[in-house]
Structures are given as structure tokens and as C-alpha cells.
Image 1 (cartoon, rainbow, N blue to C red):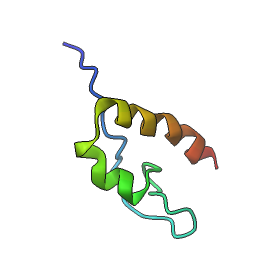
Image 2: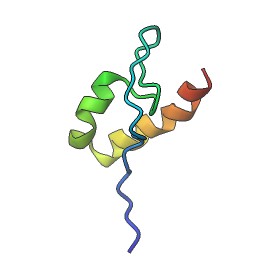
Image 3: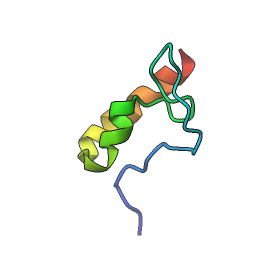
Image 4: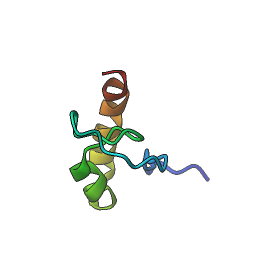
Amino acid sequence: MVSDVPESPCILVCVMDKASGLCLGCHRTLDEIARWSAMSDTEKRAVLAKLEERARA
């Protein structure tokens, strides 16, 4: 069975970049990381949509 629940983008490289405020592994903010399990699927998808652009920056 395929699940539509967005998976965490965590890759277990949990180091915060002081300049950007983003995790160097998953490119989320501390707030996004802390709230991930409480976010709705829609909120998770919105965060996931930002990660590729953040990774390029």
C-alpha cells in the first residue's frame, strides 16, 4: 500500500547553519523541525516544496 503521508526529509545530518538558520542536512528551520510531527499533511507538503530551492541557495 502506498501512503500519501509526506515523509520527513531528515537525513540524520542535524547541523544548523548559523548564517541561514537552516539544517545543513534537510534544509528546514528549527521551527519546521520541531513542529513536523504536529503539522498537517498540507503544511508538510508546503515545507517540502521549499527545500529544493533552499538547498540550491
